[in-house]
Length: 100
Image (cartoon, rainbow, N blue to C red; front, side, top):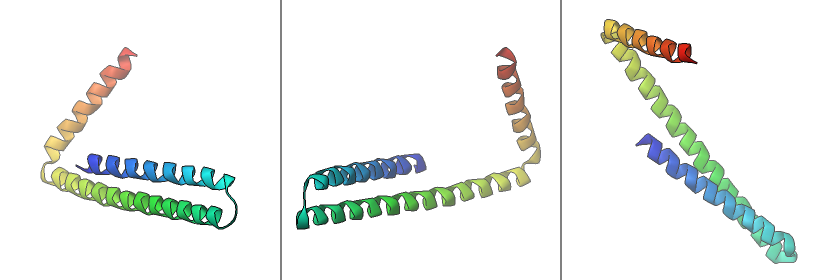
C-alpha cells in the first residue's frame, strides 16, 4: 500500500513539474502581463510539487520508523528465529556471491 501511494505521489509530482516546465517555455515567448501570469502559475505548480514530495517523504519516514519498530519488537520476542533468519540470508548471500 505504501508503495502504491508513493508511486501515485511520484507520478503527480512528475506531472506537476512537466506542466510547470511547459508553462515556463510558453512564457519565454510572451512578454508583459501574460508572461508574468504564466511564470506565476508555473511557480505555484512547482510549489505544489515540492509540498507533495515533502509530504511523501514524511509519510515514508513514518512508515519506515513503524516497520523498524515492529521489526525490533519481533526480534526481541523471537531472538532465535531472528538469528536463524539472519543466518539463512547470510548463507544465501554467500552462495550467490561465491558463484560470481
